[in-house]
Image 1 (cartoon, one colour):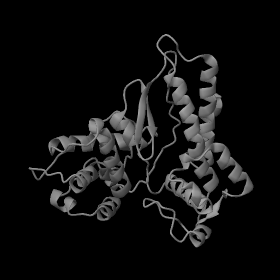
Image 2 (tube, one colour):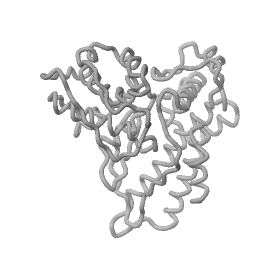
Image 3 (cartoon, helix red, strand yellow):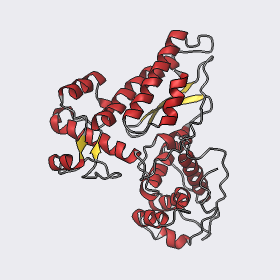
Image 4 (cartoon, helix red, strand yellow):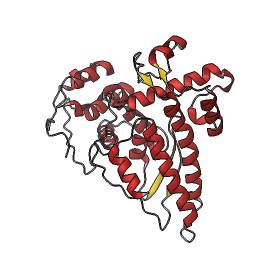
Length: 319
């Protein structure tokens, strides 16, 4: 169940598609909202041909898509279809992906497709999980930019349940996600200008207590307008996927702080989970702390501007 106005099929000449740049392809797919979804599938063909020099002996390819992954529910439906489509096309064109299992390169090329062809400024987490995830395991992933640190088995006695809030989710260029990503990069740029000796490549390099102190004393601004940032940082914010809107006010403190705190929370939970065994499941106090971290994560995500009344209500009922 998705967009009732969406066309069920998309057709284009392969030669015409493969002649396009990523910018031209994004513009082509964006012209018709009814077939914009095809960017996530046909776009993988363009990326394979461009980045991996994929060749297709037959000049026509038909892809049938069937899935039970719900759309617009925040469970990575776009990443799932990208990974499936690109993997199938890679097999068809005898393209091999480098690295262990090839899953990392596959995921990063799918992210490239979503960023450059579909126009969604997403990270790589969803594609990595779709490509390298294992049943009954959590994927320990360090997005610097995409390093798997392990597959963590869900301990005995723990269940993970997803509840549909009824709120449609989207990471496309028109969603708030792009502004949040932009604000996080702006925050990093502010820190690197004020403390160049730190040489911060990723916000997760920072210790939470250091960030909180700078946020309190004004070293890291809670909010920044696009105009003010561009005036003090003429070199930009260092992200080629998002653009700064001069008239917009960005929550640089919340958006920059989220990955700093989240990295700490996730690292602790990963270590706790990895300490569990079949005969030694996670004890109740630790489970309670994991739950507390998840509540903190939800509120932090909402402070960035990505929450909703529906999800807030569900969390309140659970809490």
